Length: 64
Image (cartoon, rainbow, N blue to C red):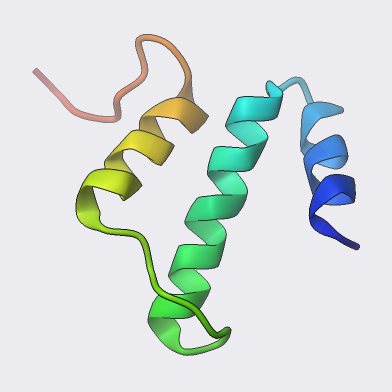
């Protein structure tokens, strides 16, 4: 499965293309952090932005 196919599969579950891309970015960063794939993990600010995008409007995952 390539990235486009993965995005299509995630979109088929009801997520937006932007949410699917954000999820795959987070997953790729986690794999890079573990050394399972080559590449640089996302910075903390990038992780927060991708997480918020994936969760959608009003879902930051943080209690206020």
